[in-house]
Image (cartoon, rainbow, N blue to C red):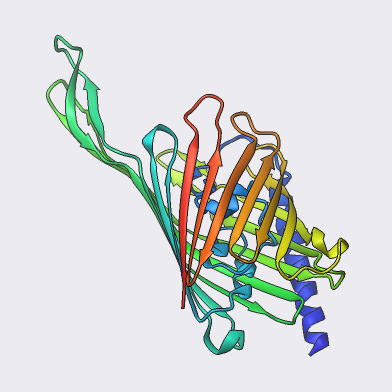
Length: 330
């Protein structure tokens, strides 16, 4: 059994070393489907999304699928809402099923829907206004996925997330002549894969993790090719109370992630979560090398079978962002 685990670890390491050169290419900011890069979970974003090693929720499918192996209840469901910049609405959620207490692993289902609002289409025309309206355009995007994770031992977990993603920008009208309009449907879709691992070192609560998100083929949009926002993350976390003596009533988990996105410069994020009596959690985070925001904050309340989370992200040039999440357990 131990040989099998060592062999699997070697295969995973080889996979990472094989895919890693894709991130070292020149970054031209030519990735699409950027809606996949926006965090929607309130707990994760309050921690600056330094959550590669934070486990125990179906929302791990959006960050590191291996973390879903830490789900203890038979059934969990998480729902999230985010009003993003310029009134763009994000709705997301995830469901996890843990039969036989993880004996067969943990299965998950995820969904994400983005509503960009309604736009009035126009084209240039020889009218007094200089244009004519072509009707309403209602662009949107969505992703649905299936995930699976399993703890191969008490220290090592793996997970994967297969998802179908689509972005539909609506039917846009183009003038073929002075009197004729031609409608073109702008929508594309792809299949993407997320993959991750979590390793508990055995030294107190020190945990390391790795994840690769949005790995897929290139997409052709009219005459241009682009990739999904491929992202590689490694991170670690530890409960600082390990060094202050055991405490059954409180914890302070610090986490750190190094992030290498396909289309942006590398950056890092730090998060801290203080939990008292497993009822109240206070959170804060910091994201480096970002133009519009850096600090994040939030809190969580755990009552019976329900957990409510909130996060706050102040922006420099836009309105501040508020995220809300709710989690239910059975």
